[in-house]
Image (tube, rainbow, N blue to C red; front, side, top):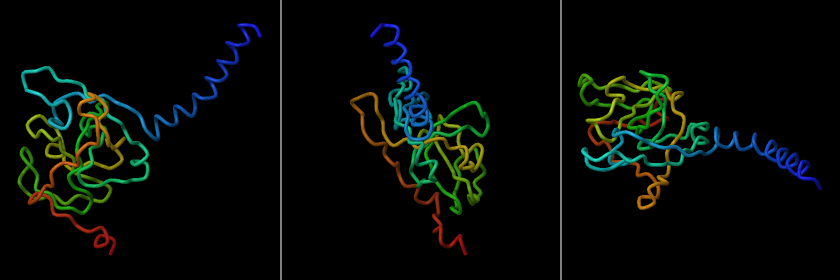
Length: 178
């Protein structure tokens, strides 16, 4: 077999695997880097004076396609204020829930409309989130972030975060369907 035909067969193999690989990374799982301070200490922990690390996380896109959300999930979403900016936030409340926002929002409770959620960064002082722009359409969510992959010393599942007692009143879904 000539070298030319071997390269041709290798090229055909690559073309065969390219569509499944693209499907997998766009619709099932992929990997991403998280930068910025809005999700500290969950991602990029450290002192304010130290340069931020870029944590590497696993993105679960399949759960988003199936609408499998729960309070406490960390998700990636397109910013409602800048559609070119992909952000990482935590779901605090789901449709029907009543949320008492933090500043800069007015202290008036907000009921989350159908098809929306309330997202916040873990670092309230470094985050532009639902306290700034209100409830977010679930359609802006691109992935759940179930695992931290790098740095290796922090490898493992992403914590669901503290419960927002006193700030979020959860409404059962069955009560909304009536």
